[in-house]
Image (cartoon, rainbow, N blue to C red):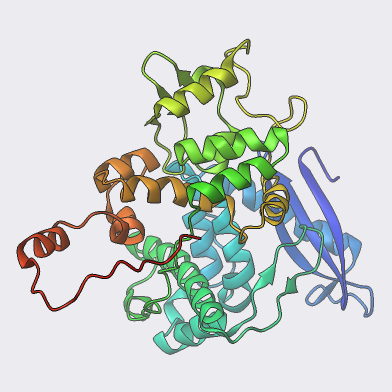
Length: 399
């Protein structure tokens, strides 16, 4: 600890240690930055290797910069306006606008953008340099989730079409973050032209993943295979289509028995919404609320503990194995809910409202093929029968 909320850390790696600055803001969120290599194997030069005293000095500079960034002041670095500066300005304004995924932006920046492009002046970026960087991400190996103190680990290099599609989708998401930061800099007049990155195109046909959803039988098998505390969370997801974070934050008072609705106070978009429940769903949430204090959590892990980030992954994987069904993510339960509505003929605008989407574009992209199609229904009704195919009484056995 250097001062309250400010600390200097040492992270050991396979090729030497690294000094890490950690800053905690007023909301309690932690900010990290790699300050440089430690003087484990070579003498400190204050450029590539730093002593403890030199690392303390860099850490204080980092703390000062973060304080001013959070306050909304851009802190110019020595030299021209760089990509790292553009990202810092963008993140500050994103938080000020009420953005909810700043952690993802920081992670993407730290992992994919800053190491290769961070020190480059924005004015000297070229289309060729950005395309090389974009293609390198798509060709790289996927990372394995690790703790913050651990060195990065990677999955084996896969050459399947699905693996290539996923890496291309990752590269596109990273490119979106970079373009947003650079466009912010351009609109503020910090750079004269935006031609370099506007001409860089995202990979095509990589974002359309095959939507996996559960049949009613699979859903029952999965629910029966879950532990008691996790079972009610899974049922809640299947009955509402809510995201894991939304369910984990639900309070008992968010269920309105009179209207049969569930209030999601803060969704991914930052806007509240009301989820209409079926009779079965209303009965489930009514049972969940019996004898409960209105301000208490609707779903708890064990005895009164909140479901935290990633707590759902292992119990869901274990339940899939026990239920003998193909692995599915918790988000797949949301897909199951939306797919069921689409296949029952619910208008896509209603499905979008239930899921909390601003319009039907995402819903139409993922679930439109499941909905009864007006054109297809019209063709089938009008075309009739030509008498060319003889009907047989042989049908396949179900199951």
